[in-house]
Image (cartoon, rainbow, N blue to C red; front, side):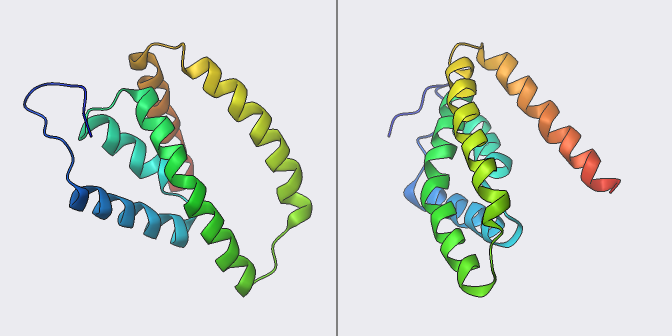
Length: 128
């Protein structure tokens, strides 16, 4: 795997990627978060991926994680499909549109917007 960035950055090891995946998977299963909160910042800063690459890679990781989490949760408790299905439709449509837009936005702006989103989410959680 090749990493674009300063020569001082090393190509990520399989062990490091497995540990990162394990940590993100643990957060995903336990809290329902992981990809955006853990994978994107680590991939962008530690592994020196462009913001768009980090976000796209994170989404790729989330597909099997979300499916397995869905199966596991559904075995232990009922799911609210009447809430999930309309949200899925909206999410799929707008994920496509916003990913197309994000591919054209400068990485620094995208990184700044991502930071603001994470910061606002943290503040909201702290005061709720």
